[in-house]
Length: 238
Image (cartoon, rainbow, N blue to C red; front, side, top):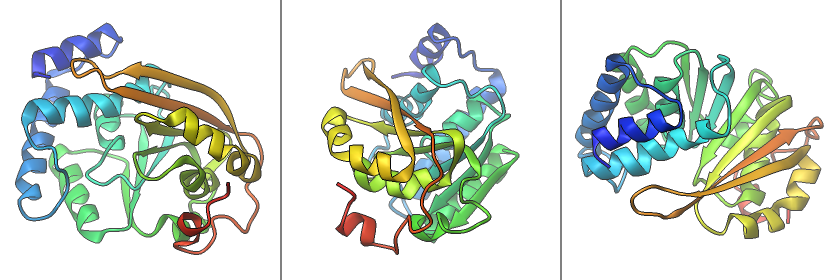
């Protein structure tokens, strides 16, 4: 996906980027490649691939969720900033918190936010299990995103405790999402989530499958979740 295609395909979805936003994406790409030489941020480094598989793919959440309201958004295990930083560039009013367990990734994101002059972005170095039990963050966010972090039964335990009642958990999945949803039903029920919709589509150009799940928080999460670090992965709520 070249930059012209990136601009055009987003415009078709009602997202028009300003010169400043385009320049921010350009800088983001350059910093990603530069820092990737020092630390492992991504296996995808070719410009066209980054624009399609990282930038555009991250923004697809906005085709189904309105990010124009300046909501509080938490991105769990964001890695090199996906999907939250592309969403923040497109929707500057978003108030973003990113949690990641690897401190060097947090260092990269802090530097990136400074260079891009992003306001109201908060970075936390922590395990998601510990973070979800922190009263400063638990059930404080209107939106929680996660992209390709873990299967739904595990991911729900890491993310749903962060969503305030009435808010939404938005996992972004590749193929096999329906199978994950089937196995994740018990976890959703226990943690207070309810699946409202699965949006399935193909990523343009390469036509690989993508799924965006819209899960509403309908009940408070029981205090014992998330369990201690490592437990959700070892014994998922299935």
